[in-house]
Image (cartoon, rainbow, N blue to C red; front, side, top):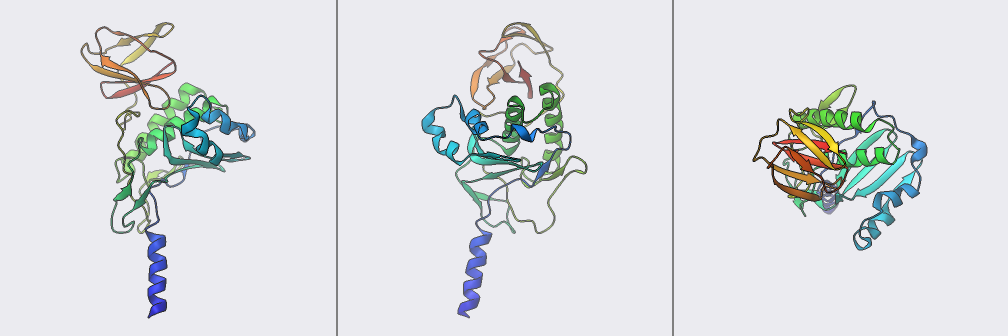
Amino acid sequence: MKKLLLVIAVLSEALFAISPKTMEIVFKSLKIDDSKIKEDLCDSIYSGLPKAETSRYRALCVSVYDIIEYNSPIDYSVLFTYESGGFTLRRQNQTCKNPILSDDAEGTPGTAQFSEVLFAELMRLQKYGVIQNDRDSLETFLFGEIAKMKEASFCEDIDLVVYDEEFGAKRPDMGEQGCCSLVKSPSALPVQVRFPSYIRVSKIIENRFFLSNAKIGSNFALFDMNGKVLKQGVVLSKIIQAPMLPAVLKIQNQIMMLK
């Protein structure tokens, strides 16, 4: 009897240690240059950020051969991993209450959805040359594929979705253990990614852009690539000025890149 109780206790501990996560995400269209995956990539990822917030995460960053693993600067609680062509994300500050009978998690709410982290980190890897695809085409591709993943998920975001570009997105198999993330995201990129947009953006000069079809009086917000709010307000004319580039514009339930 004691042995049986011990086995149950061990299994219960393992069961309830499961965290919200994504399954492996495979993008065959991405042109990845593994030669760019070097130790100094970790320095680039955390460069320009306050040392007090990033020093311990920089120490945990792994970038070697065909493996990259680090805590995302837009939400340090999310561990972003690339290994041998596949991407995964996992929350380190949450656990599943009952990964078989419930979708609920407990712990400290995150500040960004998995889809937001995935988008930001893949664009970051493109910036540093790991992903060789053209920036604009990568952006368009990710908006479309993330939308497919969200449609297949039983969570609000892409948690637990099984995704392979060749076979599409689907829900996990029956009995797959996991749960949906807790996220409180007041300033990160919008959860609902909509593409393509019917608003058209044209660059006039430097940081100024003309917004075709934008409604006067619409609320807008500008974010940097880490999800931090740069500027927000109401559209008074169809010309908008970004404090810095690149930036992400959210307006009329749409998002688009300004650069």
